Length: 426
Image 1 (tube, rainbow, N blue to C red):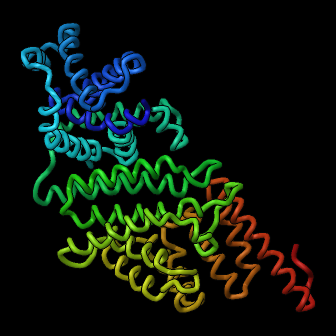
Image 2: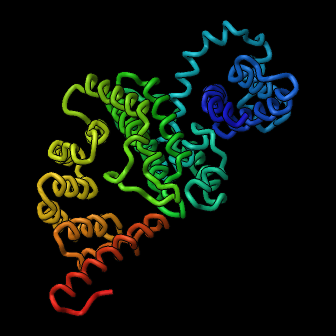
């Protein structure tokens, strides 16, 4: 039942929102239909088309609700009378409605990810309406109180109503702007699952799966957008490495140390196909997501860590920096330059970022610096950087990894001191 709900609830809510123009009411009707299914399906069996069953039931519940709730009469009375006069749709009619339902789903995507909402509100509302997650599930995924998520969702719905955001897919230049917001939300959801910001778990695979599913749905809804396929390619390829990113004890395993036999070849194939589609659709230079997917593709195409084409990766990061400049992109470019041309080259770029306000408090800056310093044979400095990175991260698994690396550098520094006749460092 939970799986059916995850799959069908977005379409159900989207179809109901189009009719009632009210997110709260649409959700209530959808959940009423779910309750009915929980009551009937165990005895009668799951219908051949669960989504159609739920939609028909929800519409009938809407009629009952109209009759029951006088305060909603003004909004729903016309709808109730209309539905009461309609015969229940048969399978053929429902099949004909599928295209309309897909349009409804697209409208719901753009509504939930509207820029009028704060980022965390967009994420929460998207996971609730399109991911089919409960408030409790969203709260557990992001390690916040359930009441916080509930408030975010309530405020998001109020903001949409107050701003009179139309339940429609934007057109022209507005489409591109709003599409960026949609892609950003999906990518944020994936990233939180791929490398959890806080907590004891290194990854939250459920969030990755939700984001991947949303991305695939979006690619079906807007098949002509290169960046949508670029994002899907990026997510598919990144997800292909998920099983190898943690050891049996849950500890993180860095990219170059991963067992590549554990990379999911089906996801790699799907990702490379999506990247090819993005490249075909791009009218000019690749967009940021397609470029990141190209970088990820370099890794999965390499048969071993030693065969990784770091020169190409560095060039792709340079293109990404031109297309979508950011301190984080520069940080990643420093890593690529260090791998392609030596750690000193990477460190030169990294040191230019040390005063960057956006990276203050970002644990990966000292972590990367520590790695480059260690490769340059400066273990004492590397140790200090790893310890600083461990202080900054809020993820327990990552903190342990960084402290392990700091300890290894400390031992190396001690050996250096002994070899030079100095006092050993613990």
